[in-house]
Length: 581
Image (cartoon, rainbow, N blue to C red; front, side, top):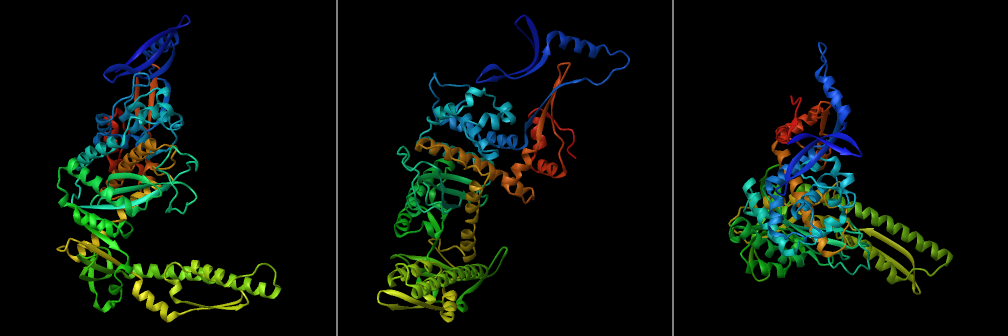
């Protein structure tokens, strides 16, 4: 409730407008606005009520503006998911010496909202974002409670077992709020480079590995993620060491998902079909899948079944999928690692053209490298300055340059050697062999499954939905994405960082889902930027009255607010909406 309070300091009285609310069951002042000295305030109040025959508008005393649109909408859905309650249910609180008015769940929620709206370090969170956001009103906290040390105190309470339990309860709430597919899940992995020092021995998760963003000079963290094939919402995640191959983490991630699936949704794992790409496929993983209850649809490299690549396209059948033309498939039962499985060779003309263009681009690059090398060899042969080029070194260079896209299979080169040095390099590309290689390898994806009764269209469509997992990774790695930057350097805090980044990614995925349901084609990060410009203004008058009003919106913002139900949400949070037409 709001009220006027007079406080005395150094012999003078001052007037304040204050709003009280219960925090952790106890009444606390959560908002306070200075109105001036007591005498001046009473004089202006008396003047307002004694205007006589010429009444005028009540003079304004103060205006305060806070970001509303993005933070309020994400806060609303975090409340629907009961994120704070789920975290506090499983994670114990801190001791009395470090306790603040915020719980562990509230700390993680504030961190997740910050990551989704305007990512910053814990040290700058209060000044750069919190105090200018509506979150400061919805979840009030003193500046001292939002320091990096207070965050760390509460993050240290979260153990790996707590993270699994939190995801189990969260999965049940997602099923209550959304119509999940509940039969097919998408599995994929990625990694994130960090700037953790090379000699930091307090961190085992961040290690050097094959980084997907080509930052092999930095330590990285790997992440396994499961997404719902129907809605595209992320359902479960796992962190693992950056130097561990993705294919070795698959079994551990699948086992964790089974436990979450059974406890979170009360469903048997036999109903679940996993979809994954060839980067997560190996003989040992298939053995584990066969021994477990899960069904699967995956992809394998063409070199595992070379005889299927030899089949001419005339033997393929046409397949019709939504928004897809000229797709062809060849289906068979094939003994793969001593067990018969259903294999589907899918040929896509558009995929063929992309791979062919990539092959030609790499060939042109190798061609220019060969020209430079040939010129350098010729110059050395004429001047005899420098160590020269041995036959072994030249062959090694060419072998490295042609390692991709079958280039070395149709490159023919000749070295002329005098003594121990190469004095001339000649080469040519075998065009006939190149066309044969293109027809054999390009444009083909080989799927395998134990779902023998599924139709070819269902198999192809299930695998194509892996783009939803890739879209989640792109969203998390965007310039304004929730993952960057990572300021932590110990394993326990990195796992908690991954947890609240997962919360942020889930909220942004819900935002994208609602945009799609409303018929708006807008990316979540662009939508967040537009929503941030929707602000609330606290208007305080000299007579002590106050109200909160949404700022003026342009046409695109009004459409966005109507689609997301932001006007009704603003009224529920005590705001006045002046114009929503």
